[in-house]
Image (cartoon, rainbow, N blue to C red; front, side, top):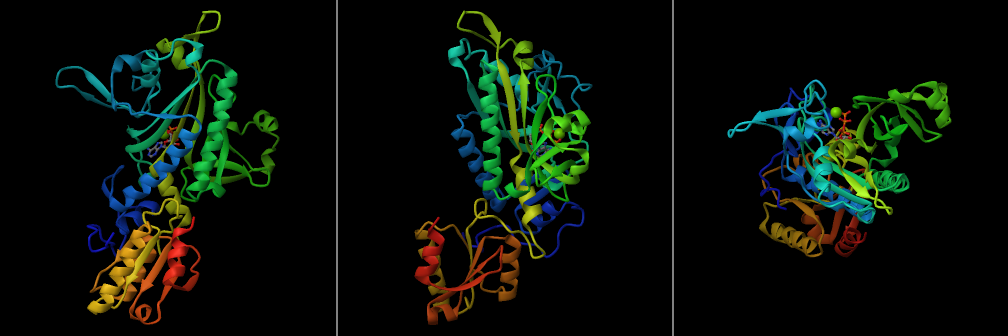
Length: 419
Ligand code: ATP
Ligand code: MG
């Protein structure tokens, strides 16, 4: 992508009304635009990051047997009445609206009811189970406070997977597989080291559920962590009896701020009983399906990456989610010979499949280009200048470490195309 082609521009200052660091940086660099509190546009660069995060999520969900689908946002009140989750007294995040044709609809804030109801068409025997279905879909929540930038918005993507099992063993096996897949996802997107599978209260069906909490000063949540024992619990699990069961004491735990990037929950038969999702077991007896739900917020994950990995100069994307692997800075572009040469290097990189953003601006000063490059945060910066044409060497700077290397064209190509 040529930078002169990109309609977004970097800004000198972060917007004054944006309190969250993640959004301030993402707005300044042109990844997102704030439409209003709790609603953001993901601009071309920002959408690329989300797409990469979503691809990693998809790979890991597919690998454990997940089947992707897409359910509607518009919700029929009667379905939610059957589980007592339509009333604003019970659910405080509903957006509801009137149909022109008469009657009310809701905007989905989760999809347990919807998927349980539709599975009645497809599940009849124990032979149909287990099955795992997921979507990456827009949720609406009338959040009271939207102050954490892209990490808590009123309209957001969620990956929500639902498991349907015949036996508790089937359920437990999948629950564990999903927990492991979540850790792989968080490792792959660069926040694994700071992310803890955290014990939370399990509701009516299991003792514990699990939140995936990333330690971060900007977090809205609080967790209690023991790094050596690799264990974390949330406030609900701070009771002595729970801690004893988990093999830690209160004194061993340190209070830390954190961001909930995902969670997994055993639902038991709560929804299947309320909505009538049953299967026939081997004896032909009707049994309620055992369910679980598993959520991740891709934009919250993106905000967490920005929050954790950025430095005083700007964003630092891990390679796995960076919109482009390399940011090529063309210098001396006022000389048409140098510009042609630089264009040639850009084409050669593209031909080899390297994702590259090319700063082909002629008027911008070198210092301005370097500052923009640091702000935008691609993993590698490649400088192509008059000197490169003369000596065949390119300065390659690794954004995360500042390591600077002088590589030949072939060395650079090899470096960018391996792994
Ligand atoms: P929180 O306690 O932070 O409100 P939650 O318990 O309501 O989160 P879930 O309903 O389990 O969250 O949603 C699954 C995932 O969706 C969360 O782990 C988070 O990553 C993401 N998520 C939830 N609410 C939002 C939001 N308002 N904006 C962006 N992402 C969100
Ligand atoms: Mg919430």
